[in-house]
Length: 478
Image (cartoon, rainbow, N blue to C red; front, side, top):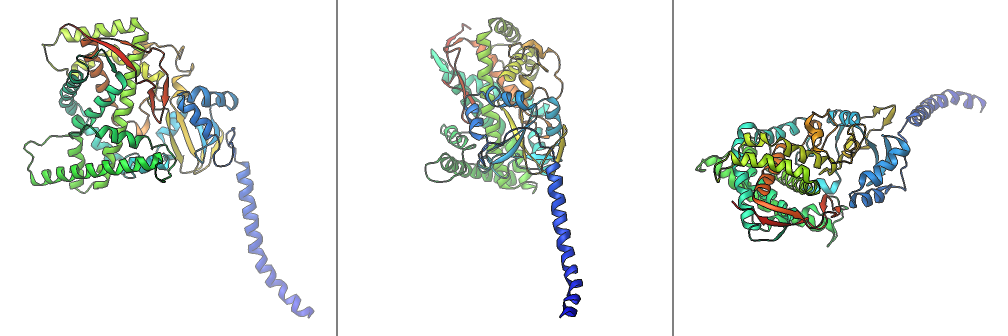
């Protein structure tokens, strides 16, 4: 019996060695993880974390004041939290913006909520990485080249003047925000894509927008369910348009080949570079990206002009000079846009104080060492525009409206109303032209004033003036 037991001992040791090695390896990994230095902060209650506090501050358009700033004062510029079920690191400052935005595709990737991805489209540019992202972005950028802008500006001028004639003439008051939403939506569709829109199309898109940050629950009557239904209606409409455009281009039946973004996207589809689903999803995304944020930027620019009469006087002088050099009824040109230097300073300062986007989420695709902390792979990273826009480190008296601060160039990654890095908004030039064109025709053709100068700004899910920013208007004499 003793012989049998002694003979089993070597075999037992052979079996125990791998087991002990596994235990030691796991122990060493646990020790190394425990030595990982996470940023300070509080994760809140399980899964939910601090999501409710985040949403509450966001709805009031006080995300920086009520959520980010108190935690920065307690923990520093880099802190951890848990938002929408994900452990998240919030970063602030120009250096943080540069580090994370410039390392897109290398250290981090875009990480939108699942409801946003499903409604905007899994094949849109916001979900594309690397070469696929660059391919689609190149098509968009080509549509906003210098040559393309020369042809785009007259179309925008015609759209703005037609919109004002139809919706402002004969009125005493108009909802500025609602009016600009209708206009920017039409410009994106008709001038940029070359697609005629039906009157009800905007309301269908708005139903989609209501669900982009809603919980992805599809029970009947939920915001997400209603948004998905609206998304299917839009998709059906766009698929029909895309297929008709493809047939025209393949058969050469177009009387005049017009270089719009839609024709470029469909051209890429014909050449096998992108799919029909990618064309449809990118049209949906770019319509949202180009019209909602632009209309808010316009509204906030008019708000700040109404509150600062000295700035308005300087701006009006700039536009009167441009108008005096034009023949009656003549459209603006790209050259005229370049003369609107002070107007663009006013718009930029308005977007600094009221950024159309609060920031965006990224996801770490590797363990990231930053500022002495480790951000584990799979964690979210949130950068915010407020982290620099409202900081005395970058702007003297940051809460004061001062357009002339933009007479000098801004350091990189300080001013980010359009984001930055490889995912810098591809349509930022379209937004700029839209803002400048609208301002020109309003201030040269109308006297106007705000009805509610202290109107609250709310968010659902993007920022907007709670009353729609009604203004009193009176047509100027020719």
